[in-house]
Length: 514
Image 1 (tube, one colour):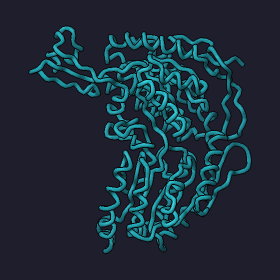
Image 2 (cartoon, one colour; image 1 turned 90 degrees about the horizontal axis):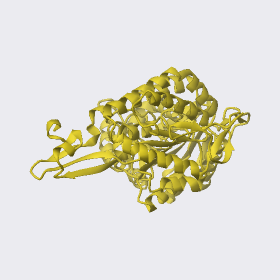
Image 3 (cartoon, one colour; image 1 turned 180 degrees about the vertical axis):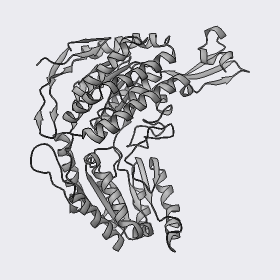
Image 4 (cartoon, helix red, strand yellow; image 1 turned 120 degrees about the vertical axis):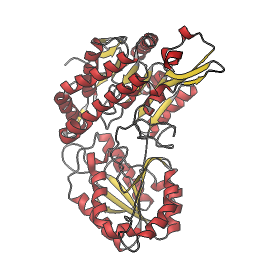
């Protein structure tokens, strides 16, 4: 079978390679037959050169034409939906229905269309006018954007179709997509849909380009090249920080989504009333997609006692009763096991799971660990290790002070949640309210999205959404990866026009438009 072609400069061609690779089916562990290239620097160099030319041309393309491309792309994805879902299932092990076909693909086309609408209305530009001084400013495109997609969302975060892609294109930037090597064929099919949409569009031919894989040195060179405008990355903390160091050294903006524990606090009166219900909600959240969501809870806090024991028993029972889905790769299974072993070495006890499962493919038992609050506080940094997958660590505290001290040690997260008694649900519900007033400020500072009585796993594509947070959840707490127009502003530069003649201003800064 021939090695797949890369999409550079508007054409599909053979890659300049340093090697090739094959994806695996994680449900079986078998290698898939298609071969994909590892691009040499020559491919990246060509893509950057073409992207710079496209960025100049895009300055003259109307927002309407950008919007039409994004909408046309969404339509092409819908035409190919069944084939896309089958390919993604084969490469990721994620269920075709409902996950891929009925949830993630519609989310992907929805965010492309939302980005199109944001491109049309131009609200992301943040036009500011000082008529007295004849100063005008707005946000404009930053230039070629390099997008690194993650392993866990083959559509909605794909480098050639996801939210980073959509936001960069909506701002008028060309995108160089670096596909994830765990789902290269899915990325190829998505790029094919984009290619069809590009053929009917008024956009420059190099507005979208895609390579499959590069070696680490080439990736660092790519994000730090003078021609790159910005980089978006979703993945591990180690890889993200390596890219950040290279981009920072070159003075290039890089937007990272990395690790997050997504703490959940269960207050005592509410837990007494809802132990079984809340246990099921936690189990649902932790086992969906085998926990391979950046927003699945990895750390929960509850007060020791009968209600806590009931809750933990119910979570363990739910975990034991569910067959784990395949993990995305052997490396994901290995790192999950290493993280669980490290938590156990620190002093966490196993309530259930904590073992790789036999048989074909890459599966790990749904795992519940627990640790007393005093042990957690004796070495909190060792217990704040992310275990990416179907695992959760429960910390049982004995006092309010112990809980607040534990929360004070938390790093930055994408989300933080508090469950508490409903108003008037019992004579004692007010005790939760008093404690909530102390817990909420401690958590609010540590997360981009703060929730009440709800698991954080779902991320709605809404203008009001913040899918970001303090380090190490992201590289900067002021930005979101989801929600338009806010997500677009990551890929912009502030442009000021001082005493520029009316006919030379961008149309959105002229007198007849403001």
